[in-house]
Image (tube, rainbow, N blue to C red; front, top):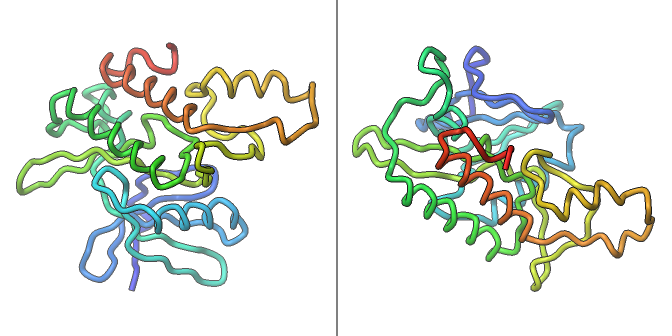
Length: 219
């Protein structure tokens, strides 16, 4: 049975709230969606059930009732943006981190795997990079999370756009151009997305991390 503590909110977005909880004897992150927000949570559920990689958040279990669907997800310690908060901020992550090169390699391997599995993430940003610390070994693993905007791609790594999704600060140039041109054409066939937009955004995340939060969305 999946339970959670409403007082322990780990995060909140437009479609879901994440709480600390327990599934069986395992501590988990419980992501709760309103049933009415079906498109986002169904796509995320489908994506997470496809994925099994060290550098991708793991889905353990799904439950639903009359109003909500809940995911039991791997519980991590923080998101990447929490690493660079002020020392006085209680949300700051102050635990150990691997060398910079290992952090970047883990993220690169995770995103490469996502693309190899025929998915494009479409919301690559520091808030969707999670830090998982093994308290016994002190080993840290970086994990990609939040697949609500993900879509399946064809063998060429492209997909038909159903609107530009994601976070504006991490949009690739081709997505910004689509936003600028969206009133100039009604031909949806021409609006093709590509996994390359994920890779551009990943580069911004790398810059954000290497610069200790000073650059990335300003690049």
